[in-house]
Image (cartoon, rainbow, N blue to C red):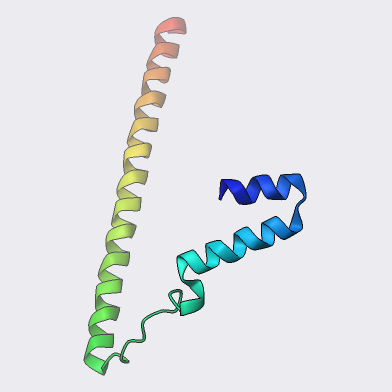
Length: 92
């Protein structure tokens, strides 16, 4: 890839094209290696199981997010209580 970039910087269009073609051939992109493997359609039961699994994952993510928010709130409350205590002590 470094050769391609240096050829672009030098403004040598023919060299850039040649290097790009070599890279495409080396990676096998013309042989269809980028295509996804075709899979059989899911059965009704498989779709239901996948949907259920996705729901479980989503609920777990939401629980994790709320736990994070709760920890953040707890920390904020501790800081505010400490600040209040300092202020009351100072002018109390």
